[in-house]
Image (cartoon, rainbow, N blue to C red):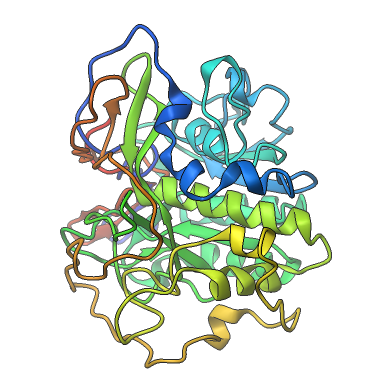
Length: 413
């Protein structure tokens, strides 16, 4: 999701960019019986069943700053806490007319009940923080700032932001201030890097703010997804292509792709680790995630495409790897683990799936955007554009203005 300042004003026209609502790709024909779990290839690749014997994320609160979370979805019943609508619209945080926030929450904490989405961290509780999502609605930098501060004040250990905005960091002073506040309060902030990799590849905020873990997307083969924005704002990567979600433009299950979804998977992974090690701080959880990530190929770490690599929480939970290190030092700020030169990737650098090959050997067949999951998945076309809330799908530049929007890739289901 993206926000933009129109003209000289700091207000931003909400622009849906496609992350989770980041569905990528074409719509697949509906099916009578849809086996959602069989479509969740990344759960098997990550050895979720084995990790759940050690941790399911219990005791961890994950704030989902998004379009709201529909707690009546079968897989989210009992998983959603009382949150807040910070947009000023006076709505309930459990009202989600868009569907993006609900899908993010399901990928994180869904129980799989009723044939719904099985989340990677089903023991987690979701704190919904609703921001503006209606098309054509104007939003301010201060809105996202309020959302982040609320999440931190509610002691959310993990803050999932599947949204973002392109432009200059000066456009978002209140968001930046809120990020610094939340980090000091002990929250771990993960934000979508954007789905603009095949186009402008501009950095997205808040993913590009210091201390925030920007998340890029990999496909089923462990390669960087071609839509995933690259650059210095990418700290980690996670599965973000070919993930089943509830269709947002029709009834049923669609296959999606975007950095929004990748961010949700990264947030769930952090929750699994934190649940197992409740005395660790946000910095320590992030540090072991960076240490145990599958290192990117090439001579540069962090890589502009995958950051420190694709996340592997099983290395921490099952193999006992990772040194938490100092509690009060943010490893991204310290650039720990950067044993090779720091990348000076230009925001216009284009990345093809083959540019930065394998990171984790995980299978995926979905391509990019909302497709129905029944027949063979079709290509994710993810290319929509007007709403505001997911950074995972790609920031959209409107003339000289920039907008915070759902990082969806264009083309939603």
